[in-house]
Image (spheres, rainbow, N blue to C red):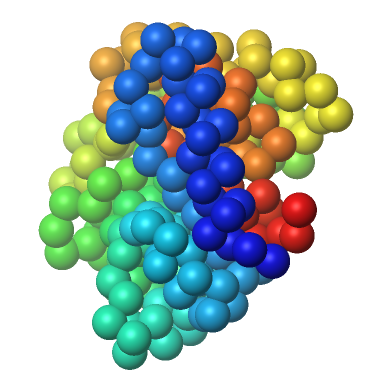
Length: 219
């Protein structure tokens, strides 16, 4: 696979999607997801200019981050998968930002164990899928109020995982709804958009994209 070429292609597509929406592509952070990637591929992505990486599992992330630190690679690491409360202590040691706060109890656990303000995003189950975690839309306001009062947490935005569909246009309403919620609360970031739908996410206001398969797969 040619990771550098894949990254160049993705960045071009992000720029074109941003232009269609009248946005500055510089306001969009590309987070390369390393769930199925090992150290050589991650190093190749870093060599192609990527400075933000995301992981779904704490155990895998810990192993990769420790090995990569030996190569003096210290990018920004994003926790984007479901975080169990018994993994919070480890997560706080290795991640710079957590995207997947899906309950007040998890937020409380992070607050209790953190030694400094942790930037977090609240996961919203916009599509109301039974298999997905996150706050329901009608409970988000109360959750924001409660979590905002916790010490050692800084709510930076909202995150969602859109349904996997054949036609990306079908998820546009999901991204649009998250953008409305984001604007209601005046938050900074919108983490939405994956390999199959990131251009729609950019058009609808995403500030963080989480892309893995399209970066590390063969064309």
